[in-house]
Image (cartoon, rainbow, N blue to C red; front, side, top):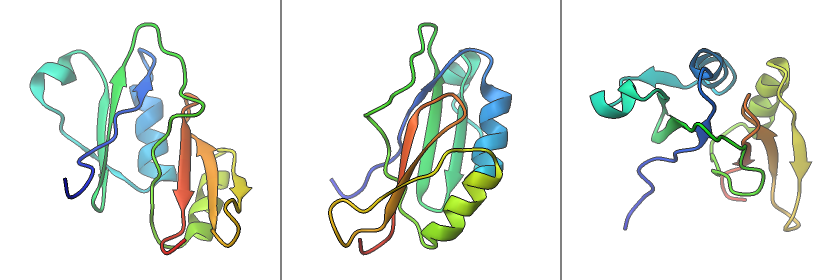
Length: 119
């Protein structure tokens, strides 16, 4: 294996517009077309640089509190400020010591982690 192709968190039915505002505005990602069969079942697809998120709809949705994607990028402080500006929580974490990162949540409660490159 050479890389992660995509991450697929879940979302409740009807959350597509909310996810588009969050991933597009707060994360700066672009909505991309999904494959026809999964798109018919609902969900949203996004890409930002080499990172792709496929948000799938689950009827019995429960947010992932521990399992999470780690979305690495530059400017972790600017990313945290952008998320705060969109009303998302930002929790700093320096564990292990010397590493810079923070956690947040998408608008449906799934945990997201943002490590600083090189950390």
